[in-house]
Length: 102
Image (tube, rainbow, N blue to C red; front, side):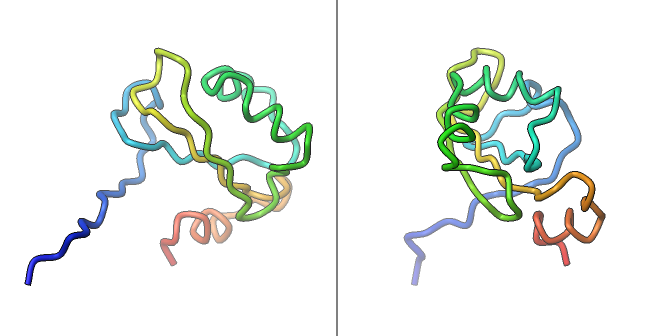
């Protein structure tokens, strides 16, 4: 029997986001906004900053926010921000949990 659902291809990649073509890019984001986070916020038309301002997204471990991409520099229609918790608590174990590699 043929399945009506196709499992999506998922890949971890260290290339620059503008070099990737995807249906959605998943990006870890810490609780405290990082200095280099501005380009992400610009890419989604300010949705990340608005969500942080209203506490809809706080960057707590496993929080999620999906935003439409408005920047032409990205080859994906959506960004999914995944909370990575406090930057000071970042370890490879946290990384593995976020990427479900353990």
